[in-house]
Amino acid sequence: MGLDTSAEKPAPVRTVSRLLSDWIGRLGPIWIDGQVAEFRPRPGARNVYLTLRDPDVDMSLTIVADVSVIGSVVPPLEAGQRVVVFARPEFWSGRGSLQMRAKEIRAVGIGELLAQLERLKGILAAEGLFLPERKKPLPFIPTRIGLICGRASAAMTDVLVNATERWPAAQFEIREVPVQGVAAVPAVTAALAELDAMPDVDVIVIARGGGSVEDLLPFSSESLLRAVAACATPVVSAIGHEQDVPLLDLVADLRASTPTDAAKRIVPSLREQQDRVTGLRGRLRTHLVHRIDREQSTLDDRRRRNSTLLGHRIDRWSSDVAHLQARVRALSPAATLERGYAIVTGPGGAIVRDAQAVAAGAVVTVRVASGAFQAERVAGLESPPAKRAPARKASSPRQKGTTP
Image (cartoon, rainbow, N blue to C red; front, side, top):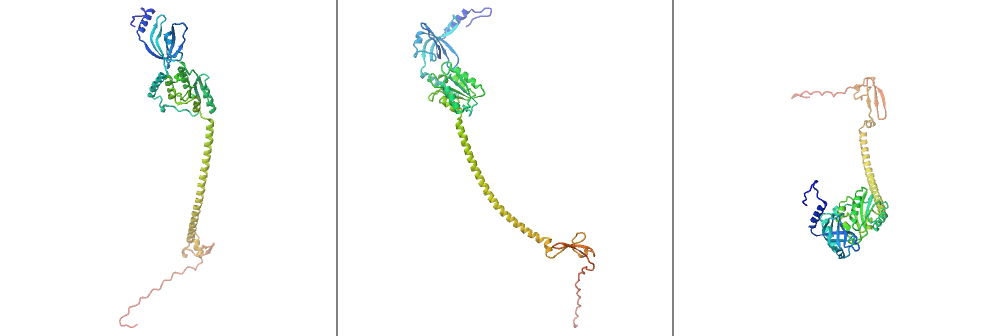
């Protein structure tokens, strides 16, 4: 604002207030979109004060309007209503407060609300928040289920009763919060962050029992949607009924049509699992029996084939052995002895092949086919020397002319 001040020459409050008032007064009017958080008209008052809150973040402005401006709003103004306000900023120098002086207030119709939601839907879709590949799978049997719902609501009862009926061991971490109005978005977002930080919470269900488009607006809030997208824990959206489709359904990891449907999605049915186990056990038993029968049949067939094959081989081997035995027997010395021959061994055990090798009086052993006996070499029984063929006399040549 261009004041030349210092610790020794400070500006008085009135000067600063006047300068702020002049500076703010030069700002032009602006259209503001928000939700009426507080609206308490006082009978007979000329001015009406209301708090206009941002539907996505915890920020608000004070709006002051003439009674005539308030009275022109159709439908009549009330807390929780979505409106657009044409207002000029005012600085109240007496108290040092800033307020917006409303010149016109318009209620936001369903068509405008839906158009705003479509614009937000396009932005989030372009960022990839609806893509199937970013959806986190739900655990088969969660350790603990986080549940965000209205206080003592029918949605809470539907989830608890149906989930525990399906899986009696199901455990819940419940956060009962406002699910409608200006307090819904910050309350649901805070509960979501708290449950997401708990390591034993495996899945989070956000449940509400339906409502009008205006009632369900908190579940299309950009800040809540981005908080859900950033969650490390899988989130199930169970808002409303089949026809209700807030943007939370598109960002959540799983969309359930109703709180009851959510209960069926987050836990398995114990009865169904028992029936499935029984069926699998029966099929496995049947399969094993058939497999054992088939293997037993195969084993019996192989045993019969092997027995036949082994019998043939044994017969062949027996025949071979018999032939070998016959050949061995025919070539063995015993067979020779059976034909009447004998084996003579001298005193040293050596086989006698030459009678001259045994001295007279020496004892030899004679082995025959059945047993053996000893004999003494008798002198004078030496074999006579082999007779030589008589030498053939050479005939003298005949002389010619001679007679024999």
